[in-house]
Picture 1 (cartoon, rainbow, N blue to C red):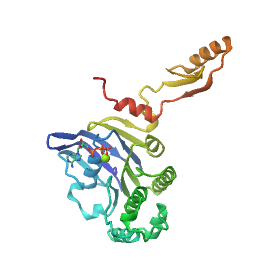
Picture 2: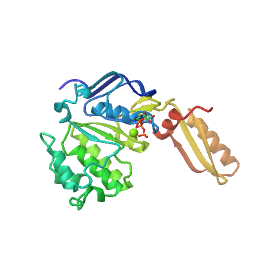
Picture 3: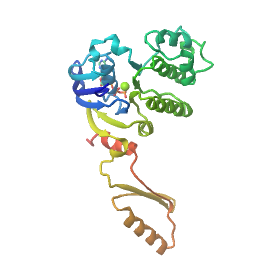
Picture 4: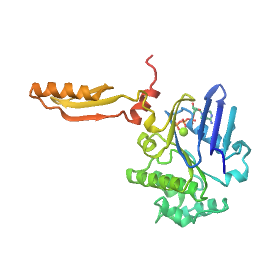
Length: 284
Ligand SMILES: Nc1ncnc2c1ncn2[C@@H]1O[C@H](COP(=O)(O)OP(=O)(O)OP(=O)(O)O)[C@@H](O)[C@H]1O
Ligand SMILES: [Mg+2]
């Protein structure tokens, strides 16, 4: 099969006078994990729901596995799995019933029991959906997206509300899906999640993409390092493009004064620091 999994160009979406997405373009290759990041209200869910075929766009071009999702063709829906940002379908059904129901919508579903185990809901098969905790409900959402064994998976904040162990388990699941060659578009507010899962990310702000690339490539000035240490109980931090010289000066000075630089660290700015810099509101 040829072509990218997702191609977006000039995409716009207005809700009345509010232009939530203001002309964005990006491509997701097959087999890639692509992360959509950005503050609340940036337009992530709007974009994802347009790609899923749940929302009509106001302008631009969108191709998902070669189809226009707006046409909601069954042949496309069978190949796509979805975790919506807000869920709570089938409150009275049990976990098993919800999964069995969903599995029927797909031509070659995964075994529902296997899927329940995959997301760590074993033991909850017979619990009603409305009786699940917030994190368990999120796991069910993930299971519903996976039960059809789709080739393209949309995950809108898939691990929000997960405890730390569940988050790590979900990461393993997402990595396993990637190993199987699935394409994944995910949104998240956890920058460590994006950093550890995504091949590439796009950062949205006010409906525009302000940065795009592999998480490690996004450092605005590639040569920058941060150097920090604790001296007399206070932490000092420097940003430099020449850590060798700076460390030499700092340590020479400290040794000459008979002082020690405690907890001395040299590092690269994290994706989180870059994100905060790119999405910061300009000072008024
Ligand atoms: N159904 C709707 N009707 C009107 N406006 C909407 C609707 N859905 C979203 N919006 C507006 O569009 C903008 C983008 O919303 P969207 O849900 O896409 O943001 P998001 O990036 O997913 O945010 P979050 O991180 O909070 O989930 C917001 O200003 C929001 O108020
Ligand atoms: Mg959202």
